[in-house]
Length: 201
Image (cartoon, rainbow, N blue to C red; front, top):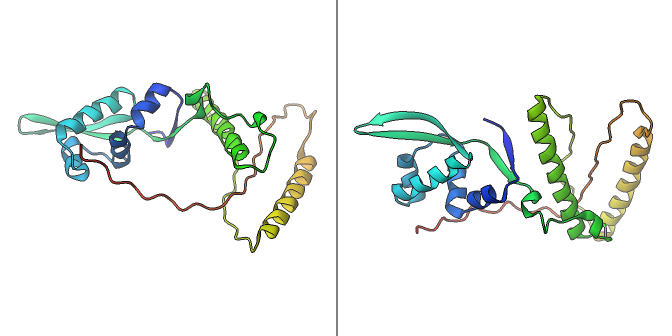
């Protein structure tokens, strides 16, 4: 099973984003059957089976094992991967950082993030086809600023430090050199959203 998969097809994204199917994908992090899922979701097994077939047809879940129970076969399925949806799904309206002049706006940061997701999706697919790993690096942390002025000063100093470091290692004419995209972002922390209750019908 792949660790993560990028959904780039609008039809598959539409299938996955159905509220019941989203819940099924979450529960299918470990193998489950329609029978074991029924009490967890609180909806009829026949309806669960319908959604499981749809997810399986689109490659979002896969059969893990089967067992005979009286006169029926109980099928255990599991999510094929963890998923993210690429902005490519919204091809005509996906954000483009080149269209924003305010590099300190939330909109520009979202556009940069969308570009990052598109790039990583391409790299992930390419690396699997080639059977090779892609060397990447990222930092993730949290900082608490005493004031807006402190945040502004931090951004100024961080920008200067990164610019100096990039200039030190950038070599435009290095034989065999490969360009790397660099993204540095700072935004207010957001608490994880609680899982919403699934409707019964």
